[in-house]
Amino acid sequence: MDGAELTGKKVLITGASGFTGRHAVAYFRTAGAVVAAVVRRVGVHSFDNGVAVHVCDLNDKQQVRHLIDEVQPDYVLHLAGKNSVPDSWSDPLLVLETNVMAVLYLLDALRSCPAARTVIVGSRLKYTPEPGRLPQPPHPYSLSKALEEMVSLSWMSLFGQQIMLAEPGNLIGAGPSTGICSLLARHVVACEQEGKTEAFRLSGRDNTRDFLDVRDAVRAYATLLVQGTTGNVYPVVSGTERSLGEIADTLLTMTEAEIPVRWDGASSGPDGAGDQEEFSALRKLGWQPLIPFAQSLQDILSDVRTQHGRATE
Amino acid sequence: MDGAELTGKKVLITGASGFTGRHAVAYFRTAGAVVAAVVRRVGVHSFDNGVAVHVCDLNDKQQVRHLIDEVQPDYVLHLAGKNSVPDSWSDPLLVLETNVMAVLYLLDALRSCPAARTVIVGSRLKYTPEPGRLPQPPHPYSLSKALEEMVSLSWMSLFGQQIMLAEPGNLIGAGPSTGICSLLARHVVACEQEGKTEAFRLSGRDNTRDFLDVRDAVRAYATLLVQGTTGNVYPVVSGTERSLGEIADTLLTMTEAEIPVRWDGASSGPDGAGDQEEFSALRKLGWQPLIPFAQSLQDILSDVRTQHGRATE
Image (cartoon, rainbow over all chains, first blue to last red; front, top):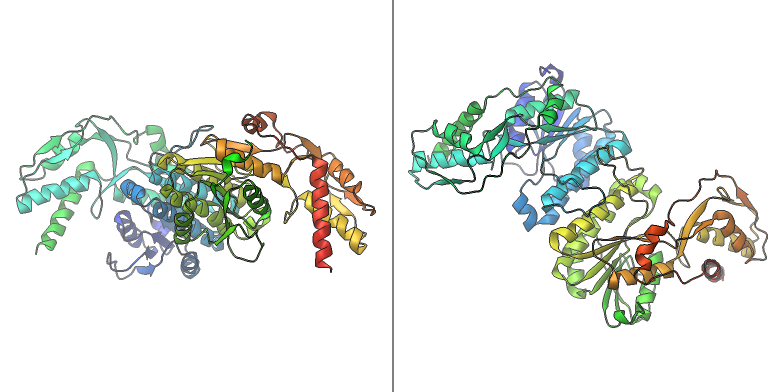
């Protein structure tokens, strides 16, 4: 896919002011799409002039119906949701309402746009029930993402909708991420600009994760919107496991500051996100990651330095 | 169980003015329990003086929390819900909100009563996903009951609650039922009292169903509340398949009126509800159906005659 398929298409993006949402709005706008950026409240992020911002509480089904009637999207990228595991323990109802009912309201409203193609962004942390055994999700968040998937695929089958699931691994990039790369970059910049000397604490050096640049993930979502097979669940991963040691070492080559790192967790091995077979489904559609890992880290660091400089001006 | 375990216990019953709810309130009251009957609105049914009626919209989590704080139940029997398959097509969101979110609000509020034991009344029509295959529930109702079960058992495992699932088959008895026995009885009484001569239409004579008197079902729920194993899913069935022909023949022996019956559906065989192995789980707790089938039919007919007489006075 070269992006030309998106020119003039109406793309509705929920969670538009979030970490992935900001990158998604920028990508689709650059590709010539007519972007409807859906946010819960204004002012969290300022979008380009050309982006239509829609304020909508996705837990209010009347508002959602009105939104869809107004935008009549060709493509829908559903990024909104609660994504914090700890928060899912402190307010489990909120995570269920937001991750399950909001997607239901959205998909139900989309019954009036049968040609629309929708990508629901799930999570690799979703709970997978074992047949014949009592469901035992590790946290309310994992339950919410399991139900989100079941509800989405069921609505597809019940009402003939065009829905695909995307399951990103660890997305990294500039912006409001709470991932390990962003946290480490913020620590680096605090050492550079504030003379902070505390050690950054990480678990085992050999623990590996699959990291993917958020811009590559957004291109994957675009690929799925245009070419994905409805009803499929697509892992969105780089296919490469990297150790925490490699991340720390690479980031530390990008700064003059002395950053002590304390390794005090047990090694837990790979998280399995980089499974090659899973990786291949999106590759078959012509997608592949384009941004080198070191480039992602460099961009995160530059962004944090800029933000930090602005904040202390 | 002889019912003595219920004396003085606080039993909260949702959907109390529904078909099963009315029988449940009467049973627990007679057994000496302190009954809190939860209804969505007053006036649908008049309860005994000794029954505390609580008006609560179970889709309003603040109201549900307030209800539980006020009642502090020992036992909870959750009967409320949308149970019509056709209605689930005309308003699928309502059936999901009512059958999934209401149970979540209830169970979440019950975290403040860790000793409470709860029976959630599910349905044998619930959709069972096949591992590795796209979910394809036959209707939104079946999806809602699948999610209700998953949410209930997950809350149990996440928050250490004492929850059991009951899955009734075809419950029959006096009151506002839309089951085949009640419909046929109403037709009989219309022929008796209004001289109606139309045929009653039924599918194949040999089609069988498992029928259970609603009073036997209520005793089963009481047995589960007191003795059930948390996390188990209990079918609540009679264990006996009866043909539609037998039902029609038995009812017709109970009237002087001439009732033509038209058999115009294909035979579809048993619905599998009377599976002996499933039946045995409750039997091991000492429960068994006590009301003979002909007695159930006679009681339905008497009730319809009384109601009909009152309505035309």
